Image 1 (cartoon, rainbow, N blue to C red):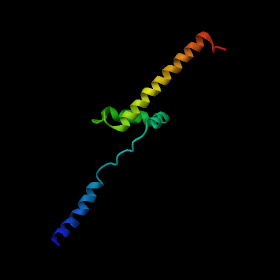
Image 2 (image 1 turned 45 degrees about the horizontal axis):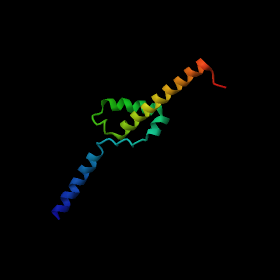
Image 3 (image 1 turned 90 degrees about the horizontal axis):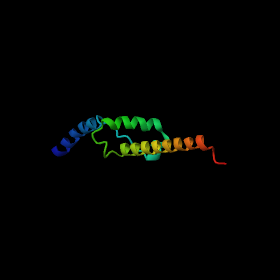
Image 4 (image 1 turned 135 degrees about the horizontal axis):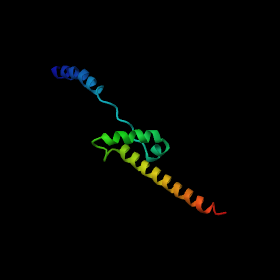
Amino acid sequence: MKMNLRVLGLLPLGLLLAGCFEEEEPNHTVQYFLDNPEARAEMMEKCEVMDDALTDANCLNASAATQSAARDENQKRQQDAVKSLYGDGS
């Protein structure tokens, strides 16, 4: 009987402590970060100051999306440069 009262006495404490922790942000895919550049930039800012950024799924996915977007932008610039020099090839 005393054991049950102790458990019931600890229940409100557990609920109180559970409310103190922030909810974790859901993991997003690389495609999500490619489609949402603002969210990608925000996540990259957060990752710069996170201790576990090297293992955080969102940091890894945002970083991969950043690299992919930069690669795509660089490729587009190169194609535009070729078109400006040689025309569109038709």
